[in-house]
Figure 1 (tube, rainbow, N blue to C red):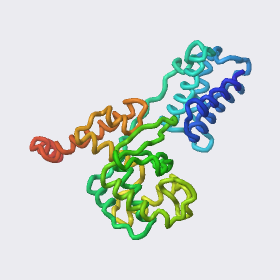
Figure 2 (cartoon, rainbow, N blue to C red; figure 1 turned 90 degrees about the vertical axis):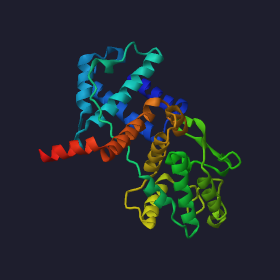
Figure 3 (cartoon, helix red, strand yellow; figure 1 turned 30 degrees about the horizontal axis):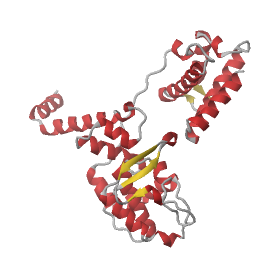
Length: 308
């Protein structure tokens, strides 16, 4: 009974939620781990409704230990308990569970790290590189598009040529959960995409993917990550560059430019506003730095502290 409900939930993630393969593998591992704890320690339990504080504390204790990693950090424990809680919420919706057992325990607090971003000077230096061949034109177009439209690297990989609307300067993106959204594309990004498309046939395309590898097939996310590192080295940017940083930089620049938070949420394809609000913290950190660098009282306060 317990196993069948877990299997049904995994099918729900695959076919209804259309969750990523990474999410499915992660959740399946976590739920099977919880099942093993229950079976090893409480073999008399035949229903998730029978799980009490005692069982949840045992599960929590097991979630806080890994033979290979020893003690897991709070983020890992919180993630595992969140996945378990999501499963229980699903069972409540389907009428298979009365209440969520995770609410019986204290979930560790997670320290949220602010996303790392590139400075505007670093972005400009990266994107000003003059490409020499079709692969460099491709990498240049990808980098410009990621910064211009804030796409996830997986979304850039999945683009086909027909997803581009050159007349309206926008791109149709298939995001998480197979949700489509339309995102504007800046003129510089569109120009660089056109420069790449003029040379794309050199790669001898085997399908209609927008960005191809050297064998003419759809490029992979890992290849984009590696090629961005090469582009940063060629352009003289010493900061580590990856697709996430370009996406984070896109969101941060929009908010610092006065963009509405909900508009940024829509462009990023975030399901909830909470995911987008992390960038307001980045914006505040930027304002704080400006204040500390420019305000005479802030400087005086720092000087007084140093004197102490």
